[in-house]
Length: 152
Image (cartoon, rainbow, N blue to C red; front, side, top):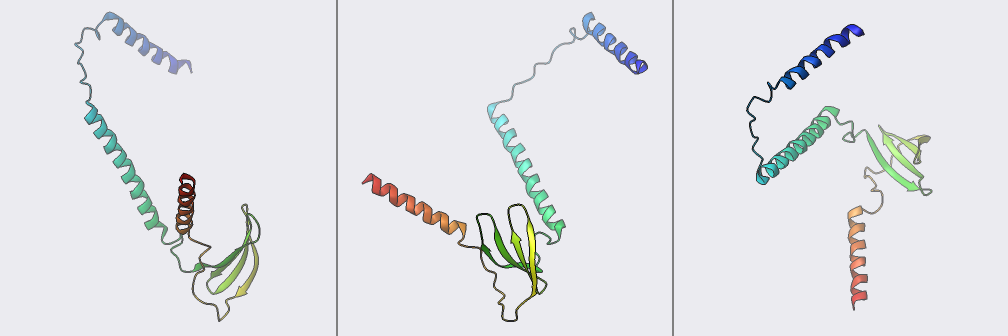
């Protein structure tokens, strides 16, 4: 350990001796030109564009490499679901012609039972409730009506 510290200490002593001798101070200092606000803004915008392009590129690459494992597969689909509590629901999932009845909580997913797909079952996927966009539009309209009533 002492053998590795001695060369480093000797190098530090030599550097401080050179600095004290004034050899570094005798060199003319080159004044750095300060960047203009426009060039600084352009640099920030270009940096942001590079970061965003990298994020989009990596997302595209990840999606391309995953090979349909993230929901693009037709082998698995949600047939139906119903809430049975605040954070609990029962969901029917179809996997290659077989229906799996799952109990879903915020902490776990449990297989309740398996059954064959009924022959009279349709191929339509049931949407889980009302779409968020429609709900948000109705809530905003309701808020506008209340604010107009108060302003009258």
